[in-house]
Image 1 (cartoon, rainbow, N blue to C red):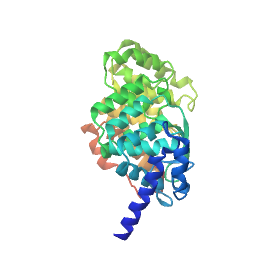
Image 2: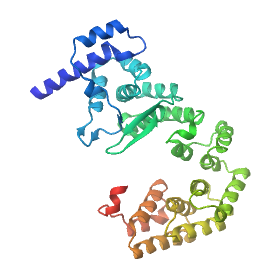
Image 3: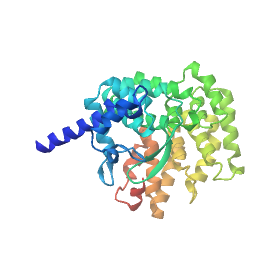
Image 4: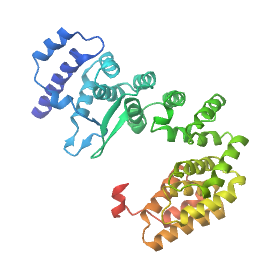
Amino acid sequence: MRQRYNQTILFGIILTLLTTSLLGCKNSGEAKEEKAKANLPDLKPIIEKEEFHLFRETMDGVSQQWLLSDSLSAYATLEEIKEMATFHQDPIKRLIAFRALLSRNPYEAVALAISNIEDTTIVATIGIDCGDQDRVSNVRIYMLYGKNSEHQVSKEDFARVDSALLYSNNISKFGYSYRLYHNLPTRPEYEKRLRQICKQDCWALVALAKYHKEDEKQEIIQLLSQAENKDSWNYRDTLRAALHAVAAWPDHTFIPLVKRECQKILGADDNNGCMEAAFRVLIAYHSKWSYNLAEKALAKAKQDGDKFMVYWDFHEAYEDNPQPLFKPLIKKYTLDYNSPKAAYQ
């Protein structure tokens, strides 16, 4: 009880520091801020971090940033949280407040993410033990989609975010664009925009393929036909995008090229990251020939003693499209999470 009481007091002090002065938010007066700070302990080690923590657990225990988000969500008013999340001059504090807003009111968090979709401010981020740099807007989207079940963002709100992303000037710079193209519904009003994006981002072809138009069919055929003449590493993303587009539209016209590419990818010692895309296509065709190709690759991996990565790619592809025909292969070629390579996934 005493420990809980002390923790509440600490959160109250932090809250006072952040919400009374708002530390440089839009409407904060400098004199009022300095007066508030003068009567408070120095909590900079808690609230001023060089990196934004993506996960609650860190190498040193629970992130103080997450505790601060919890405190804001519990004690600050909705308007105070929104103001800090929108206007604070420090992008890390904006994100700390956004996380509190997402916990407190997912609808308002979605509205803020949409209204600030073009925020290209760069911020340092850190996972459990690995750092990176990202755009503030992208980190917000990550929080929305990464914890959607916990924060109970509605399907309607996700549709609003998807639409905002699609029409963003920075669509290709969002990490979620990969999933967006896969999940986007085939609405007539989206088709023109997708054709614009496809000129800069080949992954938009995945969404366009679902419209079953002749232009996209010829584009896919051309990309798959050129695969033999392209440098395997530099061409990897384009080839993967083409294969994912076929998985979205498994037309019989593509079968000869799909067979050739999948046999090459699944039989190679170095598939340049295309293995999962090949399995995805084979599962989408849901036929005896595609089943046989998949099983041949899995059996070869088992025989070679380097099976975890191949099994992983197959299980990932199956999870996105659990076709009944392939279920026996899931049971036969199970993942061993005690494998040393499992630690890298």
